[in-house]
Length: 254
Ligand code: NAP
Image (cartoon, rainbow, N blue to C red; front, side):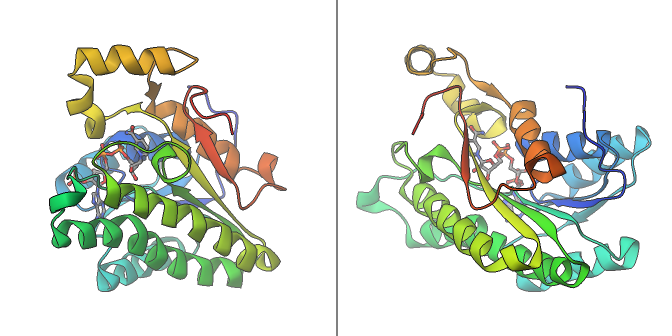
């Protein structure tokens, strides 16, 4: 996807960027000239992603960390300060999606999902927003899901609750940060081709059902989510804040 944005003076941090949607977002920003901190809980994939992006000439570094760990998140923003002394765009992308019936949902998985999908963005947002306030502005993007807005999935109650929480959090943050020039939006993908949905895509009957329900009649690509993120982070979206955007092939039109 050819970038039509110039982020060459911007510093971007993308969480969960070792693979999937996060990697596509980090790659798109790097291609548009941004300096990028690639976070992932999986050190190997974070380092591999950063090394691949550096090989194309981008200024990138990996910071392996669990976004739910306050000390590691603090260390990550400290490392960004040390390297660039600037943060312009935060993309809260890291997420997990456990599958359980509510009847016997383990409490530990419920808590872990809220920790990663909701507390992680809270922690990263606090660190980024304080710095953005001091610099006069910035952009925060929260990768939520149609599951948290308009499309119940199945056996994913913790996931849906965390993503619905993230949409509410986005609006609160947008309201509070607006006077400081910080815009906050949520991005709600439909079913996107990534490792997270690999097990679902193996089910041919399910795939046929989905195609029938999606007006554009196909699943989305990670690069298509990244394209929306670039627009939202750019000055072209300078009057856009507090919105949860669908990127789902038209499945949810509300
Ligand atoms: P993915 O392929 O599973 O990639 C997520 C990445 O985040 C993985 O590298 C994962 O590492 C990392 N991660 C997990 N927990 C983390 C933590 N605590 N701290 C830092 N990194 C962590 O998922 P994806 O499909 O790209 O999804 C990315 C985001 O989009 C998620 O928030 C997801 O909920 C959302 N989303 C995806 C879809 C879809 O259809 N794919 C639809 C709607 C929303 P490990 O591999 O080690 O776990």
